[in-house]
Image 1 (cartoon, rainbow, N blue to C red):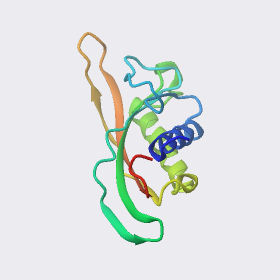
Image 2: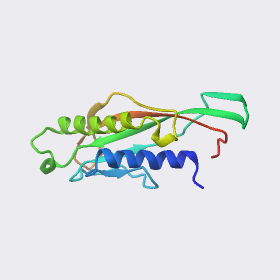
Image 3: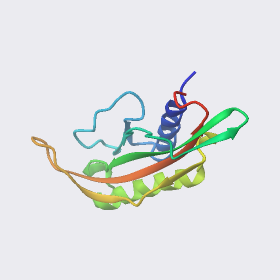
Length: 154
């Protein structure tokens, strides 16, 4: 049986794939490498971090303690290569990709029952500079997944 965190990662990957079917998705499974270059369909890289300490604990449940978490997941959005921009600027493409992710989140705020609520922070667009590689325009947003569990190791 997969842990709740692993199930949330998989559900977020499915949500991103639904929102951006042509984008390369990285960081939603075991792959942790940030894209070094732009992909034809653009890309989304998930930086998971740690769910951290519980934001609250309810000790009165019939199943024992219930732990509440707010897990912040950074999503880095890279637009398609120039040929895939379809007449848009990189910033416009990033904005459209971010809007598609936002729409997918609004359509399933509870990740199929895995979360109490999923929220998203505004998109910021900036240049990512990597030594020895061309500068890539990217957008970053933070997705907050609020969930509970009776077992922090689950």
